[in-house]
Image (tube, rainbow, N blue to C red; front, side):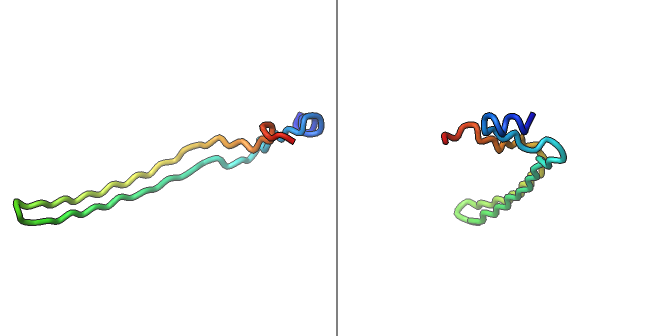
Length: 66
């Protein structure tokens, strides 16, 4: 099917087996505000984000004009 679409319509279907589409994201945010006195102020903050996500990616050329 991929060969037929590529030869007849110049449409690339892309890989369909053993394709690694897992995307990892690890982000940190550290914040420190001080201003102690003139009525005091202190802020400490720590945020950690760690996630995994499947991203479907297409390498299709069907939208290109040629």
